[in-house]
Length: 448
Image (cartoon, rainbow, N blue to C red; front, side):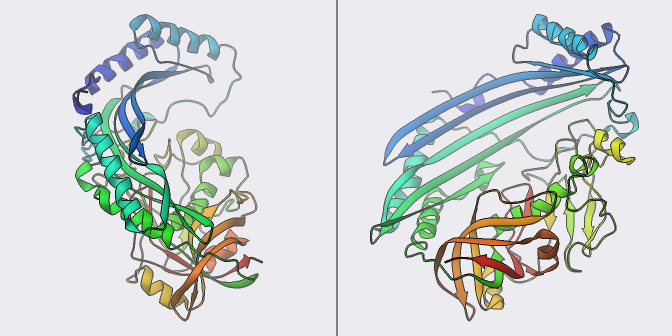
């Protein structure tokens, strides 16, 4: 099979030309404003299970979305057919829809003066010249390393290798047209271990824009195996109140609930536990949250947001105090504010940590629960009430004692954020929130 990077791919210039065609067509219909987004994604994914190929998938997706505004009314249409005829038809449909939708005075493009004028190269495009046979071989090697690690690793849900490349173009009737390409690659391994008739499941993965930055397949497999073996012999604990230490994978979700609460949609709908919280101290003094959209190779970097607004560095939380919301132009208008270049979401949120790594924070915690996986969606975004199933290890005298399962950790996020004692130096860079381990002074832990 031909290599992924050599498969037929639409270039950024091709996508920009499609955007121009759609915008020209929209203006012929006499709309007040219009915006168009076009994309092309190609990808290869191979999954191996128990030494054999289980799944091989190739994707090649193209699409275009058109939104028009007429007399404060909005109409949208999309199509995966990128022929000129199909694009003209989609534009016509969007214009027709705008004639029957309700007027919304907040609708429309972001202000023209906010458009990105310097589309920075953020080093996001690193195609992986991966053939299907190579992907299968890597998946088999990853899984084999896990199965050989310990005889108690008895089964597997498979190892997956994927390579993806996507190109995006966006333009609007302010005269802005921009495009860039980005890649995303990963290796994942999921295994099961058994002892005394009880099975446990765990996984690990590596992800990066650049395939050269991925962990070695053997390392991924062995890490997945080490994690699942450490869960064997898990027991319940009695209901108690004790410190809780979130590892980076779970800490970023814990912090992410605050990000969801300060999103513009939650604010203008009045459905946030951090309602109107600008200027309030929601974290301890040492906690800061920064947005850094222009980090090279980072998973959430972008030169401009989904409305063409130039992204920029900013401080969302400084010394524990909330400084700004996360706003698109629409939510900003609803709140009487200015967009923060976050149409489509935040870009690279950084939570700086102290000098201590996970082992040091375990020692500092003394006695408590180390949370390595969260289960369920028990978070109320309106009240901040937090209740999640948890899996991890019990710690006493600064040392891990035994694995724990079937417990629930609970509290109210407003209170829990104030109880944060420390943030670790062990940042997880695989996602859009870069956060180290988070130690919370006390939570309710419901067990047996």
